[in-house]
Image 1 (tube, rainbow, N blue to C red):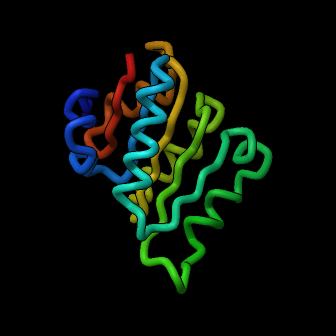
Image 2: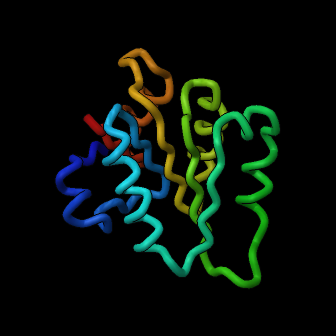
Length: 131
């Protein structure tokens, strides 16, 4: 599902999918959305990873997703600077139907990008383009 930026800015709660890709060149808008996500989910544990960390240790994200916290009821994952290097991991995680929310932030993705095409074709995943 494709979300329009003006709708998300008005109401961040419309992001009802557990797996969402944000991509584009507008860094200010992406940073503003990250702040809104953190404010909206202030009772959740928010864990941020950079793609490089995940590529170096591909069990890192799996371990955090499967690690159940006694203190926090919900975990939200943010993956920064994502591209096609973690496509297989994203495909695997989305196939298992994650119960936690995973927000993936990327720079501008080419139309041929595997990760972009995967989100465009899936009805269970959400995507948003920042222009």
